[in-house]
Image 1 (cartoon, rainbow, N blue to C red):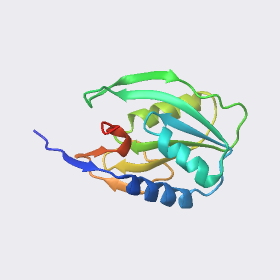
Image 2: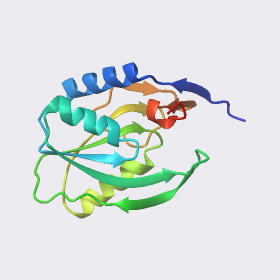
Image 3: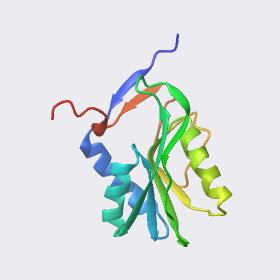
Length: 151
């Protein structure tokens, strides 16, 4: 049995990652497409840092509530009009399933966005154009928004 270590990130970790990610982005995007739910918060934060007024959501789900990967469920597709410079943001490229699906969606529309995540896992099959840190494949990452039980 594979043992997973548990990494609990803080808001300070997220603030630093968003700041670091913003400095890596070469061209200011016209639109940020967040991959919801995980990418919504960092994508919105990044939109303020980069002063990007248009933020759209691609609501895709690849994990069940019990933290196991399942098939892709699309809850909402983005409206991208005729934007030329699109930045897709997610929190984590874990196995790469979700972002690979998002890429195939845009490929079918003949759109070539750039991709960014706060973090990647060492075993991901999808490496975004921009990310800030690599975690080991056996580390389970908990973001500050994953547990809001104190509210």
